[in-house]
Image (tube, rainbow, N blue to C red; front, side, top):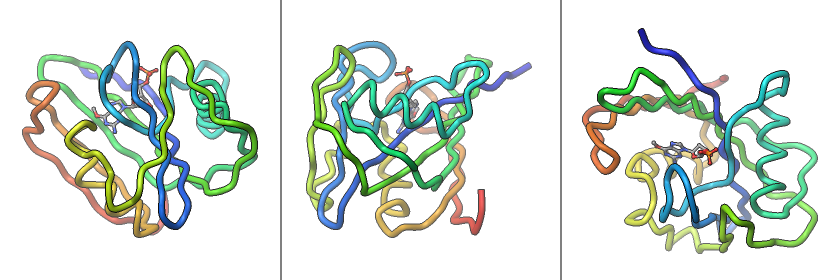
Length: 156
Ligand code: 6OG
């Protein structure tokens, strides 16, 4: 039997750039990604996304826009990662490097897909076009997607 774990992923952007962090330890180490982590017991998904963004980047946001749900399954692992994706272009605070993440702005033309999770190449274009999306990715191993589904949706 499979079970689900909830995670958040926050993408801060402006018209030309997107903020990514280099994951320095743990799951996804060495990859650039948005900021996020596990939703804690009793915490709303939105509040978890705001908290993780602050902890990992130093940026403070009031509200994040909910834009996507991505499910990830890895061969041989009963756990399904349910990743809730948020975005904003409004924030206060200063970028700080944390123990977990090294933040850096990237031009939207220059997103480092070769050093990101392979699924990002599929759904990032939807995010950059301000679409909302739902997806499922089955990984054969940490570098290889076996199959996936992805669709644009009107609501989440
Ligand atoms: P911590 O282990 O740091 O949370 N995450 C993924 N993000 C992308 N783009 N692709 C994946 O494909 C991912 N799997 C997990 C969710 C892990 C962080 O990494 C994201 C969280 O933001 C497999 O607590």
